[in-house]
Length: 154
Image (cartoon, rainbow, N blue to C red; front, side, top):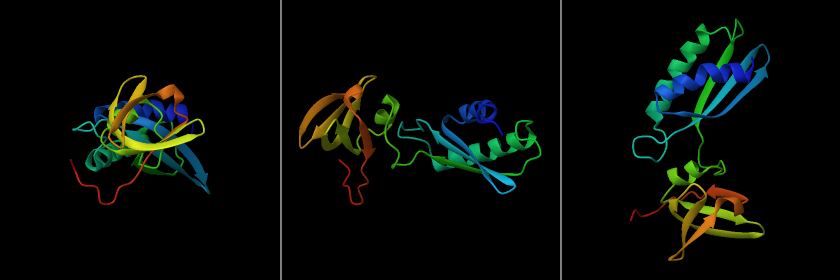
């Protein structure tokens, strides 16, 4: 199975559900292949895709792959999921979709933690201990959302 050919089948279907293909990985496992599809998207409130949307898209993608020549007769298992919070933020849309969340940034050797209060095409604004500062995305070497178990909503 070629990932490029699979992506050409999968991407239009995801688009119908308001989702984007974030990553595609095909791993041979014995006589089968595991097709892992990671999706992203704005969702109804701009905060990422909903589980119901991913489930509906998964059923549609599975049916399309069953009918597609790209898979052939090879048995496969489809796994579809969202990006999750553990994946680094790499694009402006990732910062935008996580507005309001706590993030840890690496700027060269320095690390800082703050709440995303805004995002533009080239920068992100963070509230760090009450002070809002913009950071250029080109200066950020890594950014990861921090999980908050007991966060009180503003």
